[in-house]
Length: 249
Ligand SMILES: [Zn+2]
Ligand SMILES: [Zn+2]
Image 1: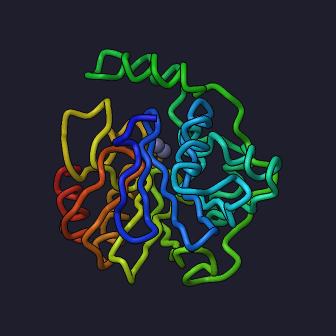
Image 2: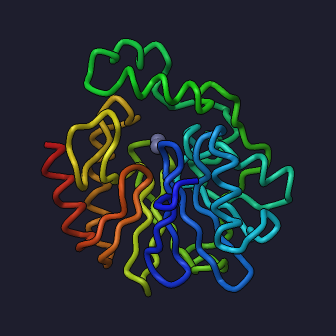
């Protein structure tokens, strides 16, 4: 694991750069909330990142999922069935995690977009990272209650549909941090833009709704953005969401 793969955002809050996707570790003493898990091929990195912060898989109190795409879901079932870790996500994303349906860029559509900048290289990478692996989750659960979750870091789920139907960002209001998954990113191998932006439109289930959800993120107070792709972004979260909204016009 590269030394710059783990970035401390705040006390007990770390953003980890996997091979192409980020995950977030919220630590409280020995206990951890893990938000997303990277690709299936990122498992060793995931376990290394936990170990680097002094945690074992058994320390994970729960896995929260922003959305059920393969690059975020890669080790969820491993933790759930292998280590009895509960898995929570938005109720609209639960059947997606079970793979009752799949709303994800298909291999055929990805190949059809291979002429776009960065897409063919990205495709080679994601195939190596296990993009075609079956990552269905056997026991995903909706959030047990509204508001802050009773887990390390006290994250607050906020529904931000569009990229997928049940996509959620996680707000840490006391720390001014928004963990934004794929609802608002700061970079991607298939984008030439740097800084706050939506992913390229081919990745979104419903682009108009994804753009509208930026208005929801605009209402979240914070000065640090931990996106699902791209580097940690320091600066007003509402302003970042507004910039992404303009750029997606
Ligand atoms: Zn996604
Ligand atoms: Zn993603």
